[in-house]
Amino acid sequence: MTLFNAMVGALNSVMSPTVVNYIAALVILFTGFITARLVGVLSKRLLREVNLNQIITKSIGLRLSAEEILSSLIIYFIYFITVVMALNQIGATSKLLHGVTLTIIIIVCISIFIALKDFVPNIIAGVYLLHLAHYKPGDQIEFDNVKAKVIEVDLLETRLQTPDKDFLVVPNSTMLKKVLRVRR
Image 1 (spheres, one colour):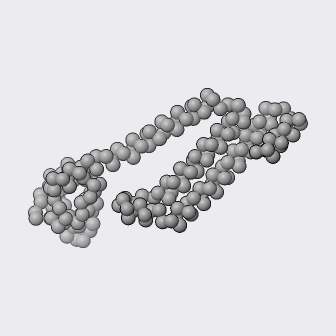
Image 2 (cartoon, one colour):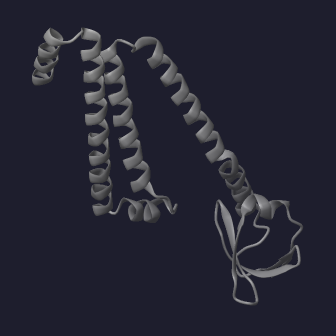
Image 3 (spheres, helix red, strand yellow):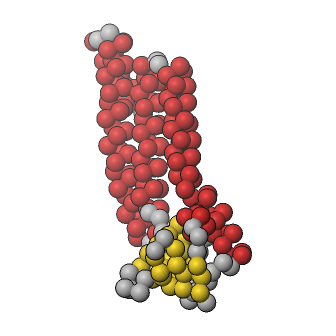
């Protein structure tokens, strides 16, 4: 940062300090955004090299794109730090930072709520279905004019196969609401 401070000091002697601070803030933003993109690409490659998605799928059984999620989180974290540094450079950190932080917290809470809106009922229904064993793999079930064989029942969904060899994936919360005819 000493080279950056020296450049800012040299510009202060030629221009007004306010203009210099805005130029410095733009340089910080430009540098930070480029750095975020580079670090994001590198982190995605590194996570892909260690096969993070496959490790999570094998250990937990959930298929999710952890590489994408983590690299995006890293990028947005660097963006956030860059914006804070740029705001600090122009002296607008306190009130604006509080507003930005509050907005981010609200967005994260809404995102979590939307993500869990379908997830939680399916897990509760999955535990209920697995515990009571209304049906199990190999059973023939019928609902809503659909006849199918149960292939697998897990916490989130039930996998079925129709007589036409089509595969259906039905959320457990939906299965719990249906009137089923089960033949073992």
